[in-house]
Image (cartoon, rainbow, N blue to C red; front, side):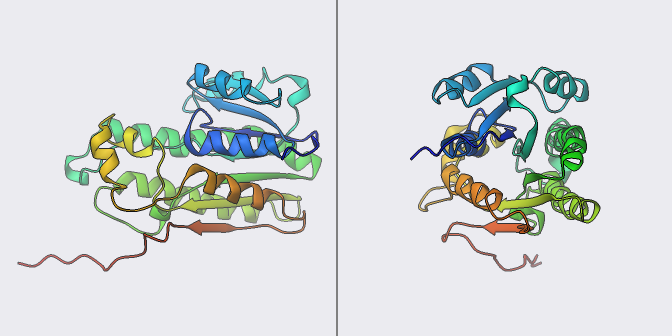
Length: 254
């Protein structure tokens, strides 16, 4: 059920699919104006057309600092100021051990999961602090604390997200700006298709025989954190499907 528009705006990165699209939809359904950012303009336009004009598509590559700044400068006045930033864009590439992993894949993950997140945060944070309110939502992962074979740089980038979120909280104490990390476990989106370079069969095997988290689960978690009273900061939410838990430490037997 659509709520009355609250004349508040959020910006969601990686909004062309998966978590980002689901987050944008639930925000719009709850009266938010949403700037939806991503590289696939047609998907962004399709998503924007599915709502009552509360979504504004903003195509750019978050990995490029100048592209971020140029794109933000084009946001229409009616979608300003940005009160909530959802740093959702991110990816994993490959599951090879470090000694066989692609350096190109490592660089793409670092540029997307770390650089892109910091570019958007740095650009939008000053106006939030000046207004005395705002909320940064960073999409992390259980991989931040739980290493597994092939996670190498992906897990390291998510560990950065966790520590960056905590340090933002320290810096922003007393400003009225809130910071939250949402850390999902096994979730079914395009994540595995991208990780396995389009191999849909290999991607589907990741979820065979179980029910993973879905984009709507993450979207509901994000809106819950955002809609807490202003004096409440949700520091971290870690969620997994019931089919997933922590495993034993690996050993090598000779």
